[in-house]
Image 1 (cartoon, each protein chain N blue to C red):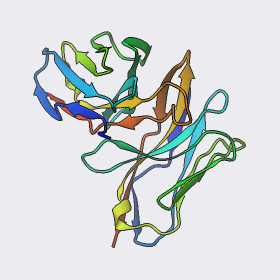
Image 2 (image 1 turned 90 degrees about the horizontal axis):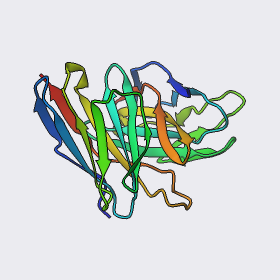
Image 3 (image 1 turned 180 degrees about the vertical axis):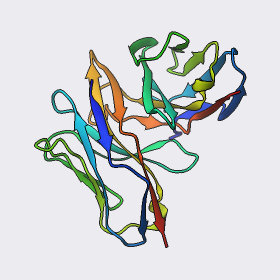
Image 4 (image 1 turned 120 degrees about the horizontal axis):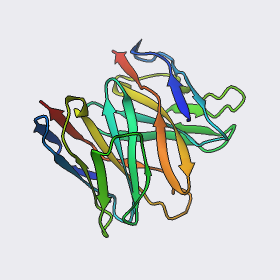
Length: 116
Length: 114
């Protein structure tokens, strides 16, 4: 079974631009979550999507948004990029439909975003 | 809100040494607890988990026991290998209205020297 895939793996943008990152969950997984990893703040939860609906959002400004499609693939968007947005963005998927492993999240390799 | 505190790193050990990485948490109720590992250039991999008090999670020689009295979930391994060099994250799961999020500790970088 293929794991969680994220594209692109690396991205360089300049301040003020916007960026869209993509995540394809494990087949059959219906929930997708996004996390930001930085050396200073560590791993922080951005949001979770399930059945195309955002179910939970972390403490991030409105510049950070996301969506989920009917095939469970998800995208996150960051507008008006700032230097502090440079980070590894990790996507995770889970089954979220009950069962003994419903709460286990499987992470993708991440997208490394650098803002210059 | 809930939080997780891990021991300060980095940690450097010799091969075959005993490993302990301390983790304590603050939470309402009794959340599920996890240890994740991140190898260079990769995402997070679930190493082990425990879903209730006194549960012991184990995998690849690593163990951790959910201690509600001390709100701890320390990671241990009896004999480390060079291949165990990675960053280790302790985490708890928050549930809110069916939505789930993981709250992570700051991570502990482990280096094993041959």
